[in-house]
Length: 335
Image 1 (cartoon, rainbow, N blue to C red):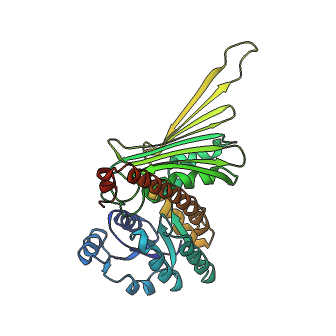
Image 2 (image 1 turned 45 degrees about the horizontal axis):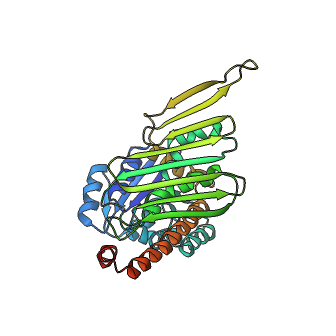
Image 3 (image 1 turned 90 degrees about the horizontal axis):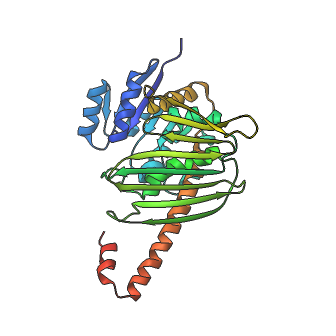
């Protein structure tokens, strides 16, 4: 029989609550407690999953083997550092941190204390993405669209760090080559951060990835299309479906016929797969596929995208100043 793993959840807002629910339902896992600076919220979630509520997460650390961290991104480094230093394995929501220096610090601490550090790039565990992996050969062009209806949640960070980083991480995991150039575009619309953005990543092996994200859409869509020699793959993250289209061999001189296959995985839960994967690494002390290094790599590219968009925004603001467009400048600076 497997040994029971004692876990806790730090930050039980929108995402953390789901973490707590998943852990509470797992066999051979004991949810020791949940922590949140909002004492009422912590108690509410604790009551839902029959565990103890903590206002200070540090009081919980001596009682657990592992934790999920779902606090605001700006607090990831502070909280994860305390947990790793206390000898606790960590699953931290994406992005790993807000800066590369903070990410490097957590990676170093995890190695120093021999702790598991896994980053919550949830789409890696989307069953459609998992089913896509064996079909990949040599992607030449990747197109991703991740657009969402506006919500207040997540607006403390740029849409690149909120949404695009998911697709950046997936692209980096399937294109086995370094990036040689990045071209970007983006704009703030309803928040002081960028709300819509596009990035074109060009790789040394000839692959190009074009990623568009928006959090001000009228609809929700999460899809990626991958084109490679002889095959086209379409992944719908929301519907958890993967479709493959390839040309069937035919008689010489005959018209090629497409061979289409489609698979759906609605009954599989990506968060549960991710957290079970984390618990598995805690048990056998193995390296996660999305360890701190992978989280850092995605953050590095995302920050380059953010920096380019900010440079362009400053350029646009200067043009508006030169043109005397105080009305538009006032809008850009009102936040």
